[in-house]
Image (tube, rainbow, N blue to C red; front, side):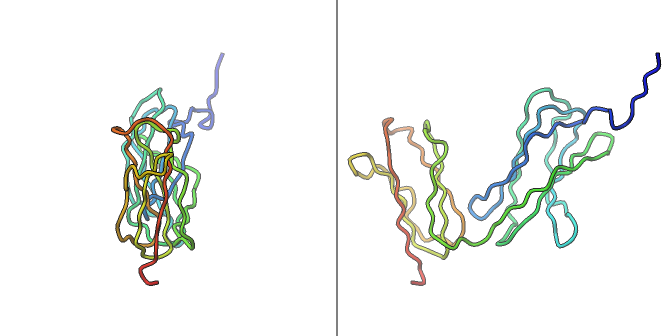
Length: 188
């Protein structure tokens, strides 16, 4: 019995299950996950520039893998604005496939903002994100449930934009802690 296999019936060389982005301190971190890979040479990270996509980076693939793989790329060249990204997955034979596009807004914040830490609960490290609409003197402090200062994480002048700070509680007892931000614009 003869079987006819069309090119559209062939398995996809890379099973991309996630492609996302997040803003970290005025930079854009792109993250993606593959479930399987066959002959995967790597990924070109592409950003839309006016009307066409331009390659801004490259991340090597695992070639062949049957386990979940996590990848990331940090776009440190982004400035305030909206950006559109996609991945160009390249096989060993040079053929390529494109991911869906994602859009990221790296606008200057309009308000002071302090976000929920993640992960929460944590052991021993967590990350706290915050944003500043203008250059500001910033102080972030960790308190225990009695209101006592446990640690001062930030006490400096910082530029406007999105920021994050890590809290490592490796030498601090496991308990419930609170954090607060005090920020005042340098220009008044």
